[in-house]
Image (cartoon, rainbow, N blue to C red; front, top):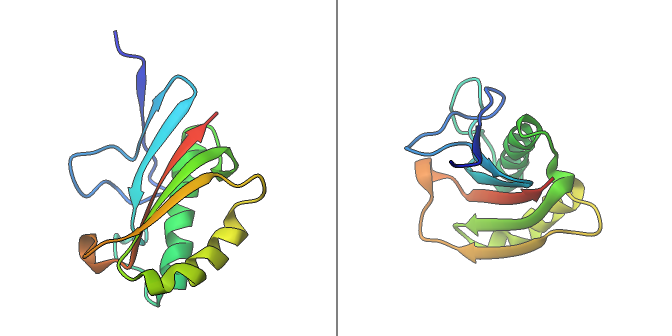
Length: 127
């Protein structure tokens, strides 16, 4: 018998493929990557990487809340950027989202992201 629980909320964008917004196994929650879609319209937020990053973290926060936690419970953050030149701006946004002790993190540049997004972020929580 599996002990995994599927997490879903309408306060974050619906999955745009065959995946769940998050999966909880025991005290660990795996949040799927979020791109900067506005949940109500499923449209990409307007603006640059700062606006996109803020929307992504708002989406992740909503999924974390649906799982019974918050981004304060993050232990690992994986960031994909289409331009590593945006790294400093994303760091500034992250500094407003996370507090010390900060979660572990990886950040990579990728060739492209779904729907032309500039950023995608996935998070692992420990509740």
